[in-house]
Length: 516
Image (cartoon, rainbow, N blue to C red; front, side, top):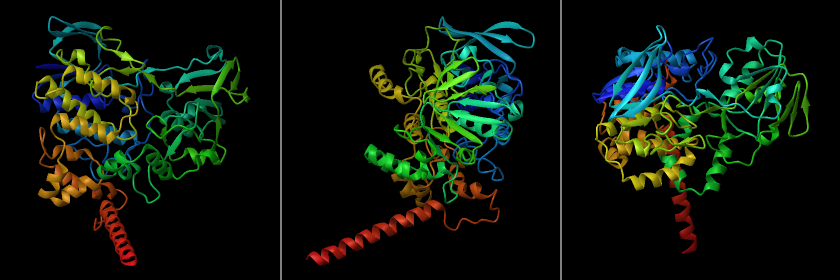
């Protein structure tokens, strides 16, 4: 079976690896000159070409964002910079010998399905030669951060200063001494504003509503995602009332958001959380000034909904997100409603399952996305081969109707479990505890790293147990090279639970003796 993969970002690399794993003949098309997608910094990108800045730090820790059969080197930092994460991708591609299947400087102009084949019109950007290629299956891996989404405030087109999207921003020195307004308060907009404070004259940050700010490390020094994403905690959170879950999450953030003008009524979710270690420091020292939502532009004057105005702004940067862009695909093929893809498990459009088309990476999460992309690819390739028994179409449509609203707020652990259950690689924790107690406890009480989905089923990896047992030492090696794990954090948590249960039991016994 011949598979076309469009894009060589994180999802495209994962797709190519999964095709190779399943024995499928894959060709990966990339219009840039190298793989890595937006993680490869480009000083002068083309239109609709998103690229992170060189100062970007990953929002998730290295163990949580690793592919399931390729742990990061222990010398890599706990949170990787752009350059280091690109290096990790290069190591992965080299280890699994994937680059020979990639075609760079090659653009897919059209993609359509005719006569039981996918027909791609492909252009070589170096020679402008256009050819036609035929495939049995297609995996769309061009990402959700390509087509810039612009705000439509009244008068914005008449703004007298410089107007650009965060997609076009490259470095703070380009705005040296200028007064800049950044619109939006997602991860990109917030980090852009923080970075600008090192060079710009004044920096303002405008948000429609408050945001919940989360730091990369907990007060104890543990990575936030390592602390949050654990199987046992996820199981407990599933049975707790919504109010109790929100109370716990707000208490975990341990920041008086109202004091900083960030308070809001919305619940904590992937849409309302922003990862930033520095934004609060910039606010309290006056380097960054928070503004309400923009109301309108009037040449050189910007009005805000709280009645305030600014007249000294030299540049406006819009960190207002992106729109889904599959313009190369025949319009009748994909169904997109309110910028959300109509697809089973956010991967398989029901009307195209028989035609073998999968969309990878069309989700947003608070947490690591690379392992989710990988599981999406593992599912898609096995569906292509007819090795996964999908539910009836009616059931899939009901599932889509239930889950499409959460496509931009996916529950990391629950979604990963759903994908891996379909693949057949979700570990049975009860059986695991009986067969290998220590590994089972690590899976249940430790961080939900992707290695556990290589313990069993299709794609089983002999190094999975070792990867799980050594993840704590790899995590702390860069900062504590001589650290020996005598008591891992999950072990101490387990002991606290046991002690609490023992104390509760003792109190119960004492109460019984008093009563009777």
